[in-house]
Image 1 (tube, one colour):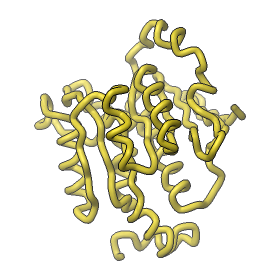
Image 2 (cartoon, one colour):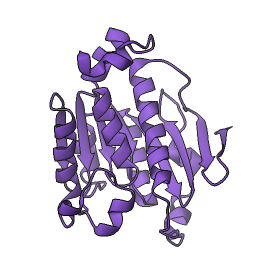
Image 3 (tube, one colour):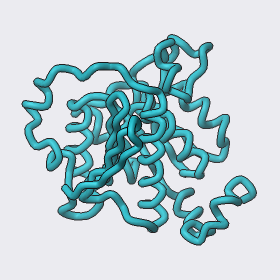
Length: 231
């Protein structure tokens, strides 16, 4: 247990919490800017089983913010390279890679083996798939999104009748018809927001703190102002 000594000292974690982390099964959809810090910190914390869904390959422009990857991995599968990186960080875990795009056809099968689904994606369509599949299978959905210097995090479907992504953005047709937002982003933005998502996952598993269920946390990194609204 030397690896986890510093968090075992926390009364909110302790040996019981560490056992819960070891037994937990968490799926990350998208291992890019958001998914990178989520995956690294969940692996570091000792989440027993981590799944990684991503059909993309590493590109040079990713390296500014996607801290899972190295220059030598450009052109290779993100899911497979992320698996290798996490196994090198913590060889005691089970890491499963799904180098495929999440769709309505495969989501139910992939989600079935996991307790918590973490949003590391970058498009509305995939988020509606995540939300609908989590609702169908009674899975907790940890949501995160970024733009430029701003980000937001919430926890959907935390309990029966809990708020959903569709409660935040109810008009799917309107959302999908919107033009794609600008791609510009500071690398630290997904880093900070991804860490906030990982924090919610650990709180949920270990059962401490105030979960962002029914709430939306938002941050502006230019001003460092944060605020939380009720959904």
